[in-house]
Length: 262
Image (cartoon, rainbow, N blue to C red):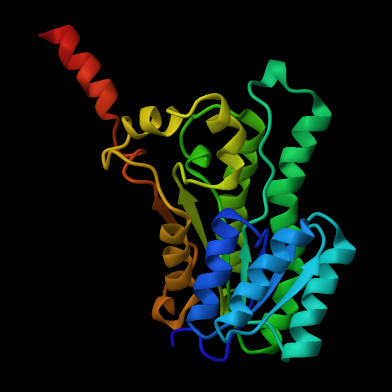
């Protein structure tokens, strides 16, 4: 097993990518601590891991609240003996253009995506250093590297990349590796309201992807697994784009241009 004997802390681990990461890490032998705001979701993930003979614990709370962050870290250290892996997956995404988003909503995006990664990393780093090293995997977004709207969320996710690179340099000497993943569109519960209004939304989005489909949470979890594992022992400060090719080129754009030129 690729994570045998490791203790992993997953923020926002009750749904979507976080749930997939928690499940996959447990399958590979990690003991998993899930920090999740929604108790029912968190309990469902932890119970499923335990039913599969894995080890997991739930801390109900927010990755933006220092007391909850410290509580999750304490569970890892006091119950399981330490902390080896942190996956900063918690996020908040709401709002559109700068002129259409008020300062409070802007701050909520920054707190949910960027401040949460800072707080959890700040809590985890001393524990990892005490263990002789560790791995932090930050979930960013393609919004961080190209414009897909959602100005506050995009700015926050770009900050996550910068934070990842900075920490990789700062804590490399202590053998803590820090990397970021930029997923493209992934099927998660967060899309449910939009899909209820527009059931064909994903079909249209898929048309701009070279692979002609959107992603699955498990596909991002597999990338996180590699980065968290010893297989990536020489990988730090990296930004892994797992986006079905959408940031490499836009076939819909090419079709439009070719149509205009023909």
